[in-house]
Amino acid sequence: EDKVVQSPLSLVVHEGDTVTLNCSYEVTNFRSLLWYKQEKKAPTFLFMLTSSGIEKKSGRLSSILDKKELFSILNITATQTGDSAVYLCAGVFMNRDDKIIFGKGTRLHILP
Amino acid sequence: SQTIHQWPATLVQPVGSPLSLECTVEGTSNPNLYWYRQAAGRGLQLLFYSVGIGQISSEVPQNLSASRPQDRQFILSSKKLLLSDSGFYLCAWSRQLGETQYFGPGTRLLVL
Image 1 (spheres, rainbow over the protein chains, first blue to last red):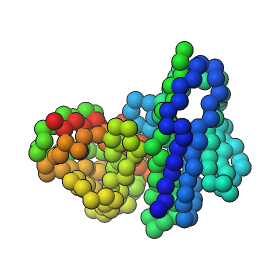
Image 2: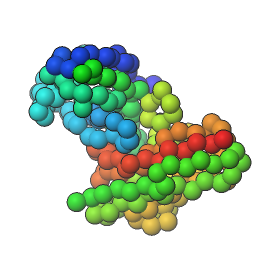
Image 3: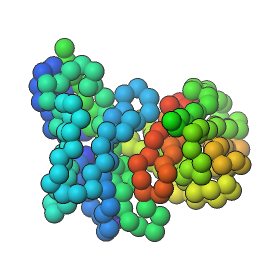
Image 4: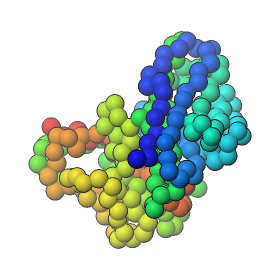
């Protein structure tokens, strides 16, 4: 069964710290991996990763995919209170319908 | 640019009552549309998806149904709500199956 597992489930750090969020997947036919940030309402798209070893970067956020070891990390440097959110990882698999499977998320809380 | 709307934002309904949640997309044609449910402390669960008018695929057996009466309209319904139907319902769209999905603002449903 295809699945996506995120760790940790919850993380509390102080403002200015750097955090690394993990996402591992078990799939039969992997296509791409997505990261989303969910604050109080709907998830907003952060990154799509399809190639191994190529870092995607947006401001203080960056992400990379390892297709050999079947995982991805999301890094946030110099965290700010506005980074507090649930970060969702989702895998896109080339099954019969190319559906997206979401992990349960990592709840990140940044203390001022 | 594309926008996605959901209505209502919050809904409190008694057990056994009917349900109708609406999702509309603007700025694109023939989108793929999705309904997700996010229960407290759990990940996103795909309920239904649609690749075109009148075409609905159901992911999990449940008390809910979906319809797509127009190209950019997706409706989630129930004839009789259960307590377990409470949750946060998200509608999403994508250009193609397996591509990045963009989420609406969500509807928070509480069944009492």
